[in-house]
Length: 47
Image (cartoon, rainbow, N blue to C red):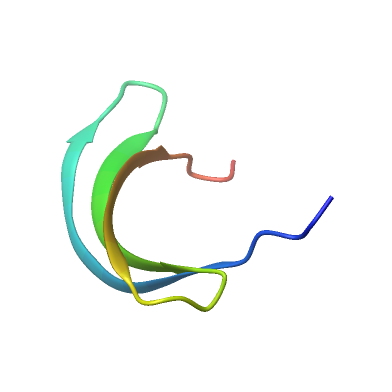
């Protein structure tokens, strides 16, 4: 399976935060070295 690469180019803001530490963020992201797009998703704290 091909590797998927991503890079957060700019964090625009945090839309919400869940009780377990997850945050819904809006970011400008580049997927597989392509032109950046607006991306909205939940991100974990890594803990």
